[in-house]
Image 1 (cartoon, rainbow, N blue to C red):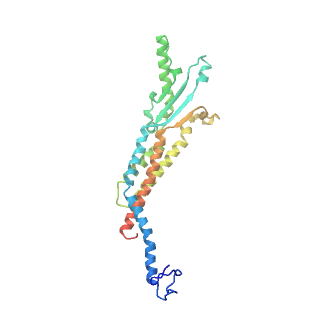
Image 2 (cartoon, rainbow, N blue to C red; image 1 turned 180 degrees about the vertical axis):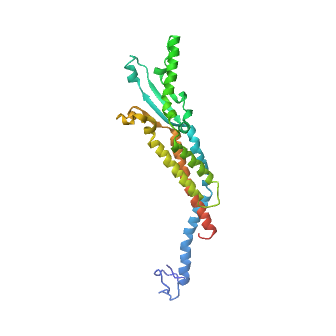
Image 3 (cartoon, helix red, strand yellow; image 1 turned 45 degrees about the horizontal axis):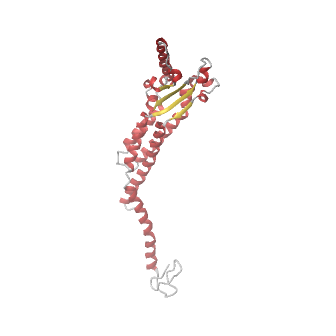
Amino acid sequence: MYCSSCGKNIPDGSTICPECGKSTMIQSNIGSSFNDSPVKEKIGNAANVMKRVPTRLIAKIALLAAIICFAFPFVSISCDASGYMNSFNDTDEDYSMKVTYKGYNFIFPSTVDEDNAELSSGFDKSKDNDDEDEDSESESRSSKKSSGKNAKDEKTNGWLIAVVICCAVGCVVLFIKRQVWLPLVSAALSLAGIICLLIFKSNFVERYVEGDNKDSGISIENFLDIDYRYGFVLCMTFMIIGLVLCLLTFLIDKFKDDDEYGYY
């Protein structure tokens, strides 16, 4: 510190200047105020920047977008049965199949139909004979229906219903501004939705793929390629964004509230 009278550099905490003998109490208080002001100024500037970011609005949009993602491809299951089929039919046809489910297919299993399946040329190949053409189309339709029956025969998936409820309620809560802590409720609901979505993924194979064959000792999963599509990834991403922004909204509102009462 420096003496307020002579300007000499003196030991910190000195009340009397060893050079001129005058009191340094006034300078010490001024120095303390000067040292504190940059810190408060930086905190205030950061808070003002965050106040201008519409975190609450973006969080609402993110949670609504997570629900919209249920209309996108959620999971696809594909397999290649060419080796098995060609062992009976000495051909080079491609016998592969891909079944794509959207998120709402697992909530409303009755929406699963033959349009969920994509069959390769081996199943859809044309015949020269009209009767053979008709038989082929019939076989293709029956194959498509059977390929999509796993999800259709299942009951409504409660974990995905929980995800939709968490996102919807969390979004509604963000419209209420009476209590500072309410964004924490939305954050908790976002976290619960993320956990439910992870549980859905963890038991998907056991519920929809293995089914009654899970005790046979042969894992059907080894013969299938399961891809969690962009609908699933986007839903998870938007919920994480909603979680972070809900927490930021709480901190910003809390800072505003404390600032009004002069805590900062």
